Length: 158
Image 1 (cartoon, one colour):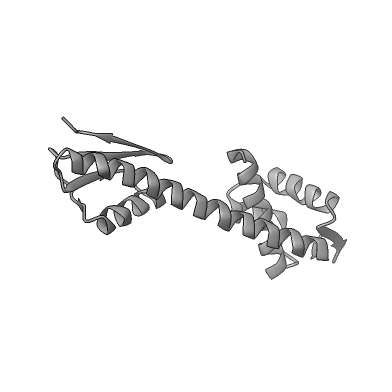
Image 2: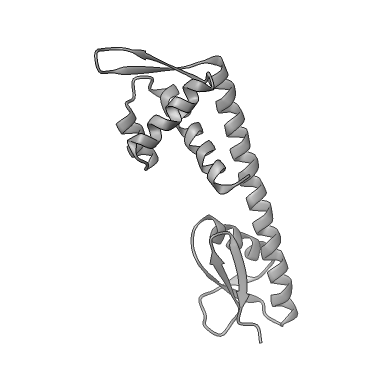
């Protein structure tokens, strides 16, 4: 699955969740919550209507009300499951990459590592290192796991 289709699925999942909790929410508020343009929200809503996942009715002259259909509830459940599966897959791949780098670190005689980067991948790296009895420190002359998005490379082994 491409990153673009994953982003679209996440937006649709978030839209369905937000609409389910507030059927009278407007597109401007949705756009702000998702960090996208109103036109992007409008495009997704039109797609969801075309899929039969959402119905739109006029609540007042300028106000719309969104209704999630049974198909929409099924889609939300499917998107949520896909999200969880994708997240766990990323978690397992990241742990495996870190374990491979730890084997190299140990083979070179080190029991400590520096992690350069932040976010979820850095957290997974730290937990995996600690689990494998590799101390995570902030020293210069030791191997470093350099994080670039989901890529992890090892530097500093002589």
